[in-house]
Image (cartoon, rainbow, N blue to C red; front, side, top):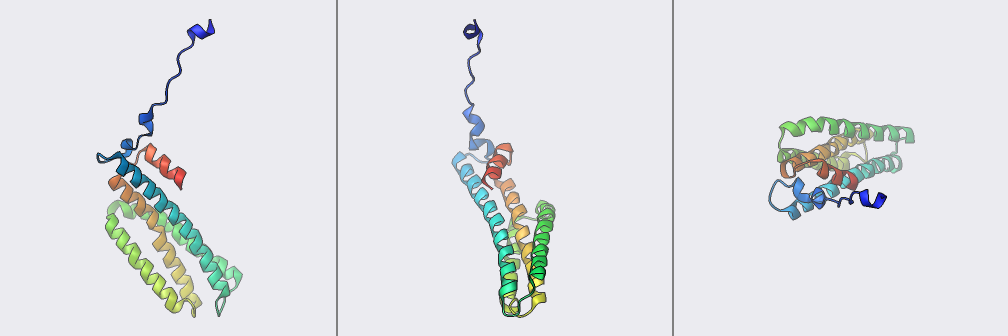
Length: 168
């Protein structure tokens, strides 16, 4: 009797996994490529920030005029704090500024900070502190800028967020 009254199993609706659900244009392959590139971009940002923090700590305690390990830990905390705060503020900036303007500003800030680190970071500990915070600001804006770009080119629905969340 059980076999006779059993309902047939439903098949997985393959349309649910289609990148076309996230497409703002006609090409599902282009949308899939955009989601993959965005996930790689965001994963790279997260990895780069951990690398920056480790670099700042190592550089600060091993340079010619080193600072103490406690002070280096505090400097990394300042970097991480400015990075986190800027990620939050960057969401509001991304709402009103264009992605081109944000990326240009971030790139200029990165170049100025890196150049200043090369010039003053070796000799002046105060400069190292200030520039590590400046690097936190520049890298903190990358994450909201990536999502602002995605909102322009991809319909950021649950499917797209799931793919990006799993990848990062």
